Image (cartoon, rainbow, N blue to C red; front, side, top):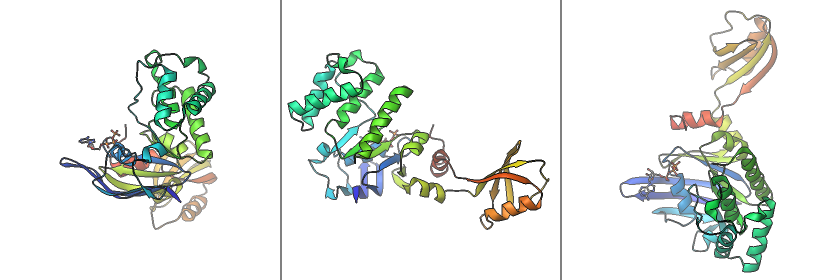
Amino acid sequence: MNVLELIDVVKRYENHTAVDNVSFTVPQGTIYGLLGPNGAGKTSLIRIITTITRADRGTVLLNGEKINSSTPSKIGYMPEERGLYKKMKVGEQLMYLAQLKGLSKRDAKKEISDWLDKFDVASWWDKRIEELSKGMQQKIQFISTIIHRPKLLILDEPFSGLDPINANLIKDEIYQLNQEGTSIIFSTHRMEQVEEICEHIVLINKGKKVLDGNMKQVKLDNKENLYRIDYEGTLPNHIGDQFKLESSSENELLIKVSPDEDSNQLLAALIQNNVHVTSFNEVLPTLNDIFIKQVGHSDE
Ligand code: ATP
């Protein structure tokens, strides 16, 4: 079962196609990475999914149903641009947003108190948003995003501006919500975070889907037959033309095997050349490598 399905979605702005025939599915209960360089079309996609804007073409299904006016109440969306009212107090702000999401006054109060307690900030109820630091505001924004316990959570750069302790706190909550059945779409430029957190990804570039799938499969699909070999002793000058030495440092080699050879042949060649191999491992590309290869420039 898929929590979200996009089929041939198109969005044009004047003479620019921001989303160009994009299709992908987000499996139920997954943590899904929505990736792409600046201007790729991620925010445009999210705004379509959350019904903030309309697609020019294509279909978006949330739990098998076409998105409609009730969709926003089923989704929790934390945009990168944080939008809290600076002059409002934390408690009244959260009460307002929770009731807007359909909670009764009583439920809203209970949920908010529980979350403020959980984050150890019960005393913030009467603080004005403008009195809080950026990271503190972000915690409040996170609470406002999940207060109505949506089945789908869309988080755009949820850790930006957070110190490592608060980032971990939010990360643990994300995992907890996911364990309880919430599907999560996570958008960020930080590839190491995606690698750590996401089970599936989609990569968008210039409005088009470049790749999608299970993280492990994406890595296997993009592997370059690269092997790391630890060894002891001395190395011969030459192992074989079919093996390209990428780098060598003391007792470690990185060797690329040509596509028509396999790793056993490399291992056999090393042994034949009296190399004392102590470990032999395939090196899969990092997501950062894949991103740069597919998109053609660094994400920095
Ligand atoms: P970033 O990672 O920088 O946030 P993004 O992947 O979220 O980028 P979008 O904000 O979706 O990218 O923008 C995709 C393209 O659509 C960009 O070229 C942008 O200039 C254009 N675009 C987005 N919103 C509008 C708009 N309201 N009017 C005109 N063009 C727009």
